[in-house]
Amino acid sequence: MNLLYNAGISLYGLGMRIAALRSDKVRRLLKGQREALPYLRHTIDSDHGYIWIHAASLGEFEQGRPFVEMVRRLHPQAKILLTFFSPSGYEVRCNFPLVDAVSYLPLDSPHNVKAFLDAVKPRMALFIKYEFWGNYLQELRRRGIPTYIISSIFRKSQIFFKPWGGMFRSMLRCYTHIFVQDDNSMRLLSDIGVYNVSVAGDTRFDRVTDIMRERPDVPQAEAISEDSPCLTIVAGSTWPPDEELLLPYVNSHPEVRLIIAPHEVRTDRIEDIVSKLNRPVVCLSKATPEQAAKADCLIVDCYGKLSGVYRYGDIAYIGGGFAAGIHNINEAAVYDMPVLFGPHYRKFKEASDMIECGGAFTFSDKAGFISAIDPLVSDSEYLHEAGRAAGHYIREHLGATQRVYTALSSIIESIN
Image (cartoon, rainbow, N blue to C red; front, top):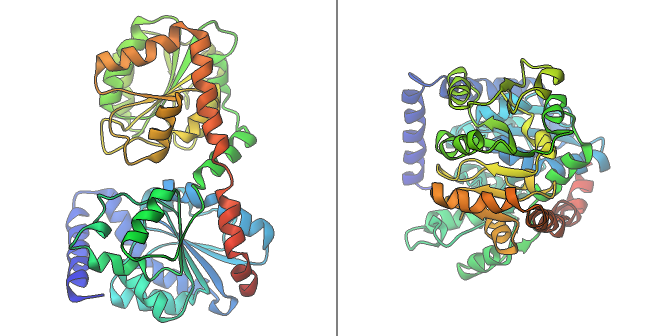
């Protein structure tokens, strides 16, 4: 990479060290990066030929998880290294049983990159969705290591398509192959001379379907939603602006019950939600199913439950639409229920598609929210029609994992 890029990486590292003075999350990240190379040198037997899979965070890992599971199922002897950049991924999946090692990814400096690749000597590298680290990509290509990115999606607004984006366009040419979600992404890449591309779809659809089939039980959520004439709204990954719309609605509509999983599970956030509800409320971590059955609102005050909780809902409210962007709508739609979310959804193709097919609804203010949710609450036929549209959309988009695996199977077999 050029001097400008490496200077930017150095400044980024300095910024993290400064941020660590106040942020425990950044301190954990820096600690994990420092420990990564000693851990890998001690753990990895590079003679075995590892498949290296990298996810920026937990969401990207869940997106790529079906591919990991397929490789493990079909190649039980394969050696797999999983790396993360964010603590939110590493700390949740550091003991993931289907891989052989889990580590933070050292920062993308030339020294770190060479040290990492020398320690691991991967035979194949696979990145999930949005990971463009220039020094890693360039060194992987220089060493002749097949390198792929899956479930990627591109938009005209990204730097790759700007006149000044030449350095970033060069990163795309380091991939052996790019698996994109849609035809538009393929066209955009073709317009800038990147042709090592194919449309495979989005592996997230496969993942949420796997979760649905596993049917994880959450007894408290089942208790609050069963044997009741009330509709259950499941609100996932909510932020305060979402709750400003949702909680007053629940307070004034006794015909609905609420299961809410705030994005940040902190004591002050839980207390704030409780204070704004005037109906009986319990927290999942503290309530028995019997106690939950007597409540109208259940707060999911722990991580890892949301994807299973959606199965108990009739309507889903997806948080983040008044912040940086909505969270995973597929986790809810797979259960044949309509999804609602705020205005910041345009980065997510599935959100636009689901609005178009009638399975999702968006709004930008209180009036819009009420206009979206009231017909769903009052008209059961309309509710079921919207839910069927959402579920049908998910089922139409299955199969990305198999398509990616089929394309890469001969390489994986050659490693093992």
